Structure formats: C-alpha cells, structure tokens
Length: 248
Ligand SMILES: [Zn+2]
Ligand SMILES: [Zn+2]
Image (cartoon, rainbow, N blue to C red; front, side):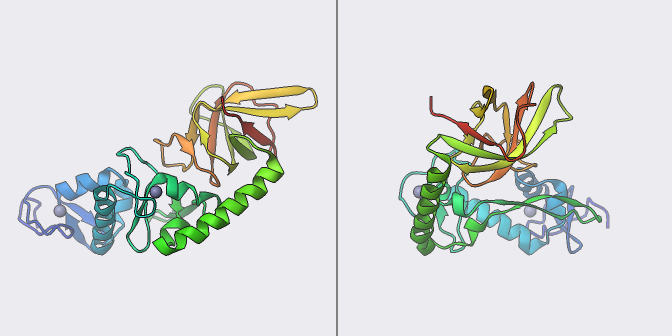
C-alpha cells in the first residue's frame, strides 16, 4: 500500500491522506497525532506503544492540561507547573501537593527495553498509583519522615547525599554528582556546602538532571535521586558525603 492511499489513523480515527507513521501492532498514526506525541515522547517510545496505550497517554495529557485547579487544595494550577500529576482516580494534583508527598513516594529511575535488545532510562512515579482519598494520610507520613530527617541532618534549605561523582564527558572541566535530595528541593544555581576538618568547601549547581532524559529539569524534588552538574574541582566531594544548601 502506498503512503498516499487513504487510511484511518489508529489513534484519532481521521482518514487523513499523506504521511503516516507506524506504531506497535502494525497500525499507523497521522501527522497530527505524531506531532502531539513528539512533544513528550521520543519516536522510539511512541512507535513501541499500541493504539490503546497511545490513546490513554493522550487522554491523560489532555485531562492534565484541561484542569485548572488542584483537586486537593483547590488552588489554581499555574501554566508552567512541571510537577502536577494525574492520580489513579483521574483527579489532578498541583505540583505543591504532589511535592508535599514526594519524600515518601520518590520517582524511581529505572530502565525499560528499547525494543531492539537494549535498554533506555525510564521513570516510575508511585504517586500516580494514589487516589485523592490517599492524599491526607500520605501527607501525614511525609511530614513525619521530614521531621525525622530534620532531626538527623539539621534544618537546611536542602540536604543532598552523594552516591557517586563522575566526569561529565560532554563538557570540559565538568562533573556529575549523583545522589538523593533527602530533604528539601535542590535547584539550579544553589550552592552546595560541605564541611571538612580543614575548612568548608562549596560548589554551585550549574544544572540539574533528575531523570537522564529530562533535559528541561530545573530542580530535583525532595526525596528523589538525580544528577547535579558542577564545574571545576570536585576533589573534596566523596560518595557518602552530606551536602547542604541554605536559604539566602
Ligand atoms: Zn491521528
Ligand atoms: Zn494542590
């Protein structure tokens, strides 16, 4: 069948002529649907999803963009809220409400099959398994956990525990510090501090990469793992170190 023949898009049902794109299940989608998917997924990702999965993805996305107020706190959700989420019962939480529970429900960085024998980075968000009724008790659990961590680490804007320090290959004189924001949120431009016997060192966070494939990220949420990109000497930072940031 030539690509100029009419066909039905497996996602929106339009019989748009012209260029078509193959998805899982030997079906095709139209140019408009592809453009919508390209905003959030790589072509490798959407081409390995079937029509039902793609429809669900787009309807979740539409649901998230349509709702203007948080189902829990009732406040307006700002247009640039990167952390809003859709719960299992399809209610919508603003980034603040989602963030208040993150410390006990962090995003898991994992890998999934890339469909050709390899693996690619992926993320699982356990908050999306909750319903609106779960929010109060998970928030209570989170508040208790936060108190325990403040008792352990002290009160800081944020606390980051280092797992690993590696050279960042793509830029000169740059390193990635991998670890967990155990308390508070780490933001781009924050100054990390570490106390040593010989004195105190500090390092500015040039960039944040909470998920390897999320290049737009500007913060690492409380409780989550991620990479902090720093420049210059890092010989004073070791795995196991506790780095802190302070309010200015
Ligand atoms: Zn379509
Ligand atoms: Zn809210």
